[in-house]
Image 1: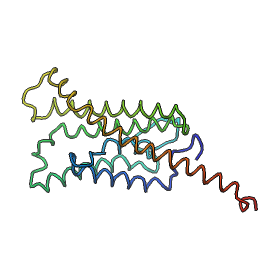
Image 2 (image 1 turned 45 degrees about the horizontal axis):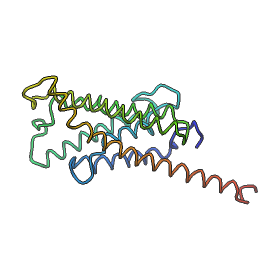
Image 3 (image 1 turned 90 degrees about the vertical axis):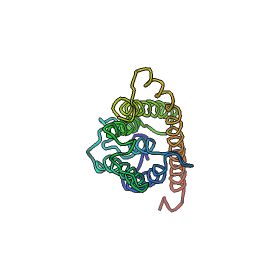
Length: 216
């Protein structure tokens, strides 16, 4: 892996996509279970590894070999919600969480994807600069996602009978830190795994170069 190369070899991206989808299904199926919902972090991480294009090129949701990654993750998230609600014997379309505001999850998760893709476009390797960019991009993307998803639910959903700007600000404060903490923990775990894998590959590459067979 070079300093400016894609953070993950192309032939490994499919496996990562499946892993991200599995983690999202396992945690999203019980939002308040022992493992918090990792959906936000999965979209951010997917944007970093699976966004089309190369570093220093504009990032988009489509194009490249993995143009299907974002829409397929989006469909998977909705499918999990549908399965969980239906399993409770409830009508998906009449559920408390499902209203016209529900579809604002698409731009909300797109913001997370773009946050990861933005970071990828500036990735140059394991440096302090990249660590700072990771923290900044994750906080900004998760905050924007929260603002869109929470704001759309508060102002559009019929589940909120009385609306006011002060009430919205109070509602924002009630849930912001839990969502942010969960997202940053999962992103931090992914970053630690990325660092470990990168260092391991460097060590293996160095060992291969020093091996006598490499000079034959």
